[in-house]
Each structure stands twice: as structure tokens, then as C-alpha cells.
Length: 448
Image (tube, rainbow, N blue to C red; front, side, top):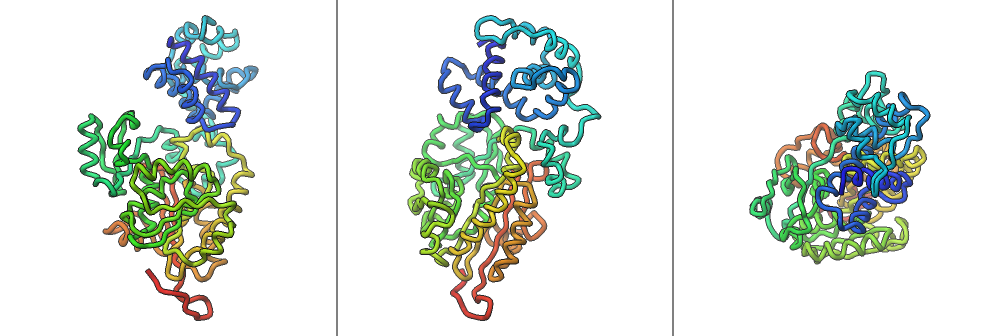
């Protein structure tokens, strides 16, 4: 493909993504499935164009509004500006690519040409930009992010605008981390040990995972280090009864099965039977035979009542704004609306209230989000504990020492991870224990 053809493909995909019907990675993957003639370099270039726009969209829009207020702000205009401000194309490079020839964008209008000429040589950031533009997030989120991150907001926002490394979880049902690292090295892949997770590896280069034997055989899975820690801090032990209440496609379910050494009973619940079905192949590949998939009609499904207080561990990886995952899903931030946060906070509270019914006396409820917002994290736990006096917060240091050994490298009773501080996606983890004795003194069961 010519540079112009790559630009035209990226423009078309950006317009599809802007419609908000599917995540960007799904849109791009589907395009490449339908256009198999696109080579490795073509795919890298097209993806690079798209994600440059998605990550820095607010800054690009600011420049367009400042220098060419009459131009429509769409995929084409944003990409033209990104080519110059982010990818260091010259105005002549842009003009040659946009010559209107077959498969290439139509020629620049006079206004587009003036805009490209005016921004040439400028830096993408400008001192007049407000915080939400420099940070590249929706303006309505600014007070929420400031409340959660304080003085770290600018640094964290910049980290969220950088591509994430590829984190792999080693499936300890099949091999240990050092053996996995050696296998990857034989395949020419340099994998570093993750800093906090004892079962994680980090790769900084593009890796054709599907072609690796260690991946096809279930020896490794893609999973951010923060997500690995969430599963490990669930402290699911062999022989326990464990419920993954919002299992989705089963990433944490697989990690829990490995923690349990494939012994015990692990139930993967989700309101989407389709997502659970998609997990089937991964479960088989990983050798996780203790998993029962349980579709729910809703988080208030009668199955929950029938299995009340019968689980040692209940993990709630709650639906959330996903503000901690913008490194990987930058398009998600632009789909968020204020009402989404309001609805999600209510839904999280209701899911927690339902899931807690499964926890046996002495058992634990683990609440996890991939959000940075206090409303979805600390505030959610504070409200839950006020209304559920038979639960108490377990300091994360105690949980860490039992589950991972050694002193916890994080302060505070709950765990908050972020890209700038920890090099992970943004994650929140809180662990709560159900009392052996109910309020009023009645004994409810035995601890584990």
C-alpha cells in the first residue's frame, strides 16, 4: 500500500470508530480480516495513524478550532493534523499522499492546505491549552479525575496517553515463570519479569502470539499486571469454593484456576452467556478443568439466592468507566458521558449487594475495577460497609503477605494502581471479610 492508501484507510476507520458502534480494536481487526492484502508494515502504519488520533484527539481538536474554525472536525481533519504534529510529516508529504488518485484521499482544500502550513513546525502542546485538552480526556471528567489523582493528574494523564507494553501471565498449571521466559527467549522474544506480579512477564516489542507454541498450548495468556494482582489477591486456595461473579471472557477465571492448582470448585458467572461461551476454548487450552460456567439472567438471578453463603471467595470485577485502561482503549474515553458514571455507580452498588449473598461466614468479598475514579472505588466500598455491618475491610498489606509473601509495596487499606506510578493499567482492589458472627452474636460458620 502507498502512504496515501494507508492514510485513506485510517480516515475511513476513524469515521467508523467515531460512530461508537464497536471498540476501535474490533473495528481495526475486522478491517484487516477483510483486507488480507495489507502487509505487516501496512497494518502497523494504519494502526499508528488511528491510535495517534484517538490518544491525542483533544489536542488535535484544539488546534483545528484555533486555526481553522470553519473546518469540520472529523477523522480526515484530525488525521491530517496528526500527521504533521505527531508523526512529523511535512506539508509536502501530506499533499503528495492526498492526491486523489486511486485508493488515496482527495486533494486538500484551500482551508486544509492553509491549516497544514500553519501548524508545520509547531509542538502539539500549547501553553494556552486547558488541563483537559493537555490530558486528552473529556472536560466533564476533569473534576472527577482531580478528586481521585490530585497533583498526579497531569502525570497520570500523560501516562494514559502512551501505548502500554504487552503483559503476559504465566499459566502455573503448565510451567513456571522462568521456564516460560526461557521458551520465549528461544523464540527470539525478550521478556522481562513484571515488578509486582510473581507470575507475570512484560514484552515491549510486537509479538505474533497466535503463532507461538507456548501460547497455543496455554502456557501464557495476555493479562495486564494489575489484573494479575487482582486475581492473586483474591487468595483463592486449592480446595476452596470460589465465584468469579462478573467473569466476562474469563481472564481472571483462568488466573484463579491456576491459583487453586486446579483443585476445588470455581464458578464463572456472567449475564452474557455469549461471553462465557467465548471462554470455553481458553479454559480448555489452559487446562482449567474445575471451572463451571454459570450464565445469569441478571446479577439478581435466583441462582445467587440458592447458593447463599456457600463460597469462600467471591470476586466482583465490576463493570466500570474503564478510565484505567485508556492506554489500551483510548477510544473508550470519547464515548463516556456523565450519565454513564451515574448509572455505573448505581449498578456497581447493586452488584455488590447481590454478590455478597454468596460469601460464607469467614469468607471474603473482593471488589475490583479498572477505574481511577473515587466514586467507583473508595466511595463505593465506604457505602457498602455502612450498609453491610457484617463485612469488614481487610488491610491490603495483610492480604498481600498471605497471598504473595513479604511486605506489601503499597500503602493504605485498599490498593490503587496507576500507569505513571506503577506501570500497570489503573486498577482498584478492596478485600472484605464476612464476620464469623452476625450482628447480634449468632455464629454463622467457620473461617478459612
